[in-house]
Image (tube, rainbow, N blue to C red):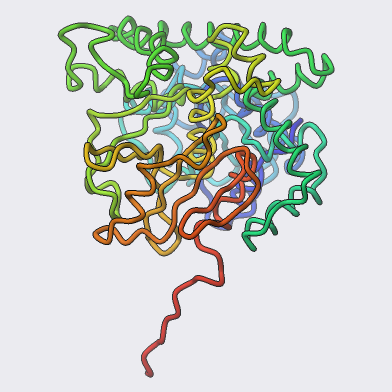
Length: 452
């Protein structure tokens, strides 16, 4: 099992005095079940796992339970050993098959004898069908594909090397050249392999055979299409059309999703629920345009103008011709790789908990991403995949505007860490240290507290 940052959050839930049920949601095949199962095997004496997707008989049995007592009785019949109060984790996987079981979480938690974990794909969509969501009795954990730092842990990059990157980012000093060059190579590999645990395992097992990884990624893409057909209901054709169009739209000049590519008469309001379905299911990442690059960014977002990224960079690359994967991996700079590098940055931002926004105006041009630092200041980010790293006119105009008072901008590229006035050049791989760069300790505002 790969080490995941989400596991520490699961451990905090397990140790918490305020007992709730754990609900883990996210896209298919990102490692949710593996992590919950490991928690159960490590921290409990008894683990009862019920998979509602692969076990139709179990699904039917639980669907017909009239109350919590009957539900527990039926679960106990599925266990291989007696349930021990206080030392048993009941894990119901693929809960999207019976989302109303979530309604019972309040009574199960109040019963107090056992601990409960639920997980599943498509939960962002299926939870809307729950009759009564038990607010206060469920701790939600949203998982994503493995980020670059987790990928490095999985493939054996030394922790000391990653800590050196973190220290360099905090000090805004260059990473040692040998480490910089090595991590650029690892990052290009990550762009192609992605963060799906199965793809990373295949990469490790087949000793770097990217062709074998691509076969597995193709299967994952098809499984997502299957889920769309199964769970998107009457809107499945629309949702699938958007999903199929995603790589083409990203490869366009603007990368903005143009609705008339689906239908000449398409309007956002008519398709809004389809985009919500894809993003709620963890299949796609939506980046909204803002009209005013001021905090809070959400105040001026325009949901009808947006970019749509794939949730996993490896799956996106697998949907393009194989020549693009080769170009990324071998650093063939004459091939346009802008779409996939923007996508991997979006994926890392979301994994780190940052909402996705971008800025666009006729006067200043387009800046790839906007985020907010710890003090609430807006920080623009530009992504450069090619050789013209220092050409960023739109970012320069944004930083020069006194109206917005933006303290710094970040350019993510192949360059080592460098500061040029208000622009910080940061290597792609260092994005896992973004928090260190947004507002270094030395530049924290000095606050004089009033005397009491």
